[in-house]
Structures are given as C-alpha cells and as structure tokens.
Length: 365
Image 1 (cartoon, rainbow, N blue to C red):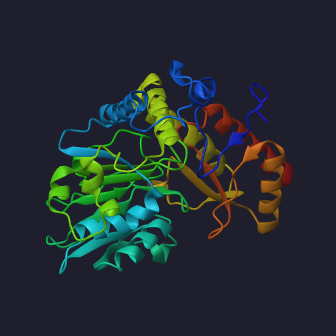
Image 2 (image 1 turned 135 degrees about the vertical axis):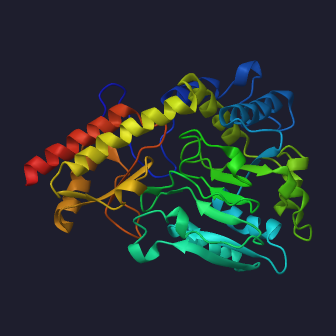
Image 3 (image 1 turned 60 degrees about the vertical axis):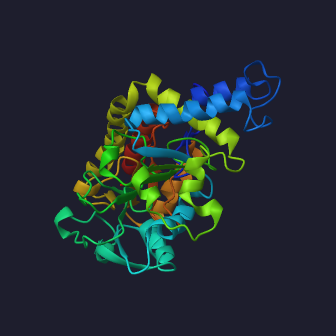
C-alpha cells in the first residue's frame, strides 16, 4: 500500500482511478457546492449554478481537443454500449452499408448491434491473431458509398491501440475512444464522430461524451425514438432530460486537472513514461513475463501480459493484491494480467508495480 496517502495502487480497467486532487475538491464541495447550501447532486439541472458547471465542462473539452464549431459536444447516458445501437439507428440508412474494423471484443459488440438495423460488414480484422495487433492501414478496404467506418481506438481487453487512424475521405470515420480519450492529442477533424464512456479517463461512470459533426446530424434518420436521436440532445444542449449532474461536474473537474497538468501533450508524455516502466519489466524478464500485444500495437492505457506458468500467475495476482495493487487480473474472457495506466494513475504506482514484478521474478525464477 502506498504509505504516503494510504491509497491503493489502482490499476482497474474501469471504473478506474480518478485524480486525487479532483476527489479532494469534490469532497470539500460535496455538501455545500460553492455557497449554494446544496450538493451538486441536489440542485436542479436547469439552475444557474449547474448551467455554469455544464457549459464549463463542454468549453474545457472543446479547448483541449481544439473542437471547431462544426461539431456538437454532447453528454449522454447509457455508456458507450448504447452508442453501438444509436449510431446505426441515426446514420445507417436503408440500402446503405457500414464498415467495421474488428480489433477486439468491443468492436464485436458494436457490429452485433448494427446488424439489427442494417448491413454492417468487416473491413478488416485481427481476430485470427487473437487480437494481438491493430489491422494494418493498407488492409482496411471500404466502399465510398458506406454510411460510415467504425473503429475502436484502444482495446482494453487485449491491450492494443491505434497509433494512426485510416483516412476514410468522404466516408465519416466514427471512433469509440472510451479507453483512451483525452490521453493524447487527437485531430478531431479526422472524424465524423467520437464517443467515449467517461469511467476510464474522464470521470466516474454514468456520462458518455459524444463529439459529432453537425452535417451528420442534418442527414440523420428521423423515424426513431426522440430520446435516441442525437439531434434531440444537440438541440437541447444535452439537457433534454435530466443529465447525470454529478458525473458532468466531475468530468469538468478532471478536464480542469488535465489543463493544470499542462494539457494533452504533457499528459501523453506522462502516459508513455508510465507504460514504458511496465513494458520494460516485461521485455527485460527473459520470458518470465510475456506481453499479449505486438510491439507496434501496444497500448499506453492497458498493458496485458502473462506470467511464466498458470500456477505462478495465480500466485502473482495474490501477492500483488496483498501488496496493495488493485485490478491486475485480466478480463474474464482472456485471463492473464492487465495493468490499466489511465491518466489519473500516478507514475509512482507504475514504478511500484515495476519493482514488484522484478522482485517477484527474482523470487520465483
């Protein structure tokens, strides 16, 4: 356990670590939000106090990603999983197809939902390689008449991440960035839409960020339920129904924290440093630890690996938990180990894990 503040070394894949500074500020404001005599959770979502919080979060997000006025920024509910359905409902018209790049479990879930509304198809897949890598850009083939092309920018379960995105030209590129949003600079203009659940890099669970180009909204399907239209939320500044007010407040504070840390370039540099601490322990272990992802596709957010044999792997996870490390077990679908090093995970936690891994290897080789 970290002796300085008695907080766990939190490597959970989501919900995941939040910045301690943000938690402490929320703690101070919890029962009396900025002199209102109420918690942020108690006040009307249409009050002036919450409006300032709401619009401030949108403004910070726009600033950090340099989002132009050609895009709407929405705060929705239902997680990224609801977007798997909303995207084809809104954008996949009769007679159209949509291309899906298969890079892991979440892209599998996305295309499954799209099949309920139209004709999605795989434009590339690395499933035959156990999703150890991101598909090569030259292997991504789609049709110019497609409604959109969908990618998952970072794959939490398999520990892979896109370093460059395909150029889809006039076909809108839609990206699920749930597990690496705001972890590095991104050219939003390359995308027709970006969406992300907040619970990994942006705040607590309950808020989903959607960045969507306005021209897509203008051409979207209209014969769908009101609450499931992106235009409904865009026309009402994400206040058509009661939003997750506390989650939006926390999201705004996390974005403020990113600004205070020096913005996305500084955050990206920090994330690379953290990931390399652990990857180096894997690479220098002479096979005691083996990474799942290929070198060129390694994620800076989710580091997946196996220990020399199954018995030692179980022992590793038990001893790690006893030492104060949380969330190191791999996803139940693949097993193994996984360290999620999202923005709020401090360098000290990654250094501590590196030292634990080296010591465990030394004691069990």
